[in-house]
Image 1 (tube, rainbow, N blue to C red):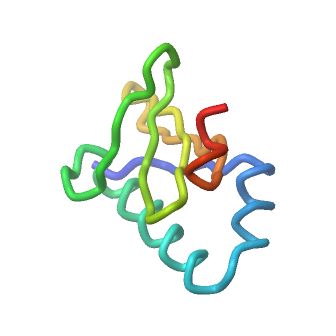
Image 2: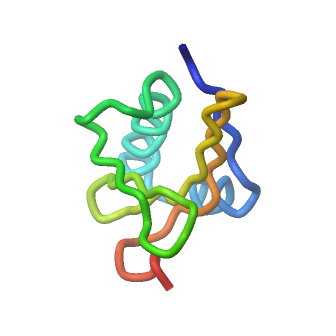
Length: 86
């Protein structure tokens, strides 16, 4: 049961600006997130006080929303760890 992954324009811009190793690591994790968002190896957590989740990739955080009814994951932001929760 694969999910469709939709990446916001802001997240795409951030992804393009990253170094190649970071970009490929994040892209790989996003791909795995689409295959199985409940995979415990992905280190996904729900954000407190928000309806979003976060995916940890090294020092980067991928903030996303998940709609199980229609099997869609929408990537909202990709930020460095310090800025991700502001």
